[in-house]
Length: 243
Image (cartoon, rainbow, N blue to C red; front, side, top):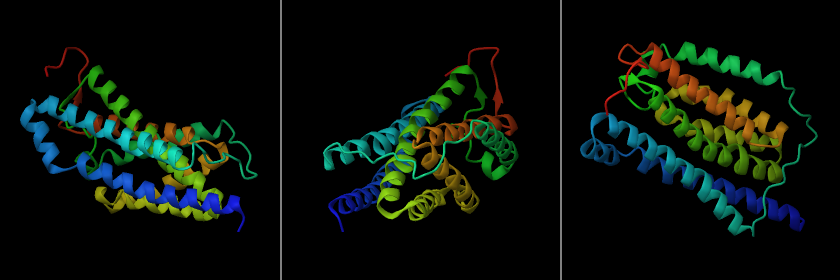
């Protein structure tokens, strides 16, 4: 084994262990019952929902994006994975609108289901105006930027360089799907094909940014359609919503 191969394996193993560690470091405090009760106790019902959402998404960006990036850079003396294309060609632009249409279609279909309405949108607000929509979009954007940097950036590229494309995709999709288990088996299984798409696009484009944008599109469309189809929620733009 050459020095380069050994270095790439060390990077991959470190990234894999780091991904598992920081995800659980994020998940348990973000969704703990104690934290939820604290926000409910110290703020009004609406503000508690909003502040909890902001806390969860900001914590996700810090622990899933910023912290892993810093630790990896410090561990390997600011060396980063090589973003080589592995012989694959760039993605034609017409592919993205097709994927976006599929995302919107799936969001419309799934958001009509009661089990989805019980979890999405994450902020359980009866009235949604411009401010609430902006908070939702901004929260998901900052969270998913860190999330996709970790999964379809750091983890995917280091494991692909060390073990090859197929093992890297299997590792990535396996973890991505497993981390959806708290949301139920349907979402866990649905994460498999979507994770595959995100991995392929990231490897072809040599960047996690397209995966981030597609994932963000899925989260935003799911939230907005869930508000639309939820009988206990509505969009309200004509007047200011009381806090």
